[in-house]
Every structure is written in C-alpha cells, then in structure tokens.
Picture: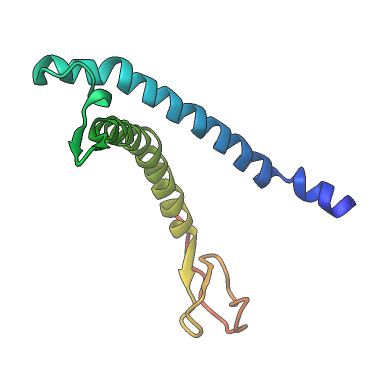
Length: 135
C-alpha cells in the first residue's frame, strides 16, 4: 500500500494530472474564443454568421460540415498558441542548456564517451587523457 501511495503522490504523476486538467480547460477556452469571436469575424467577410449551422444533405442524411470548420479553426488557434508561446520558448531555453553542457564536456579519444573537459582519466575506459581548459 505504501508503494502505491508513493506512486500516486509522485511529482510526475501529479504534474501530468494538472497538465491534463489545464489542457482541457484551455481547449474549452479556445473553443469559446473561436465560436464567440473568430467565427463571427470570419462571418462578416464570408457572409456566414456561424459555421456550426452549415450543412448539406444527401438522401435525407445531414452532413454538419460547419461544426468541423469550427473545430478546425479551434485546433489551428490552439496549435499556433502552443507553438509560439510554449514550444518555441522552451526550444530556445533547451538550446541554451545544451550549449552550456557542451561547453563543459568532450569526447574521450579512446572510447568516444562524453567526459568532463577537466578530466585527466576517462571514467568509462579508465584511459589517461589530457585535461582541457574550460573557458
């Protein structure tokens, strides 16, 4: 029972649960924004006040393509917001960390594993290496 309790209260699981809840609320927010502002704005130029009402019929079957258009617009807005406000900034932040990490490590000339530039002996193959100065 103690292991299960530890698993449930683990940081990663709690963070994932919070992310799912926030993502769900964010999706609702974007859908409301799309239906409340973007769709009517596009309707001004396209002459359609709401895409959700658009459909066509074939042999009595109704195809609600307007709901798909609303969902597509919501998806595109959500994807753009996530890309420009989450993915790009995190990518730039990760590049900085990678550059900082690259500056303090080098490849062992004998076994080709990453070692600290200050190392005089490889921790993996125990070969003697010449230490490099770290700038």
